Image (cartoon, rainbow, N blue to C red):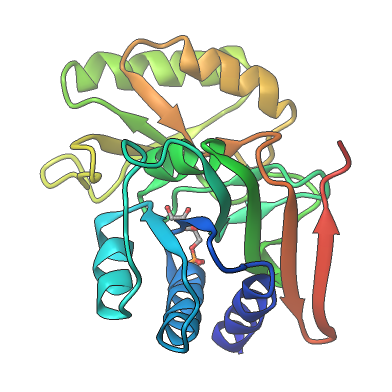
Length: 231
Ligand SMILES: O=C(CO)[C@H](O)[C@H](O)COP(=O)(O)O
């Protein structure tokens, strides 16, 4: 069911893709539906160029026959279409469940517009039930982990912080970093939390996407809703 809803959200967003566009291509199971549907359109003659947000999405895009480029060749994109782990009414997001948050954020902010595609289970009142991914450099991991825990406590959380896939065999992102997942339950002030985390030297970035998404297609049992960010 959820997979079918993800496909419906992806299909609705695909309507916003036009010939000649430079498209940021997201990561995750919802984005994979988008890539497959985009591939069908490309094989039918649609001329677009894509910039993928992960090696996984790049491989699938190539299989689908989608022409790919980079932000070196195309520093500005027309549109990025990507999934999310959570989104609220203001279209602030938690992303990074698939471990691609850094490239996803770089590509989304290099785009004139970011469109989120999701099934309705991702649409929440308050962000935070999904653990916040925090991307960190391997050097100084122990100290960075302590600094992150201290910052979270100072911001008023009682975090449960875990190393993704464990300390012995940590998850490695496409950029060669690790991910700490912070279970915060509810994020009271996402902007304050973002600023505090980004002040820690070993933190590369985190999964809060604030004020980046322009619109979302949310698929539920009663159809696909389009929500615009009020800005
Ligand atoms: O941020 C992401 C990957 O880093 C994904 O967009 C997010 O995890 C949602 O994934 P899915 O579409 O599989 O539910």
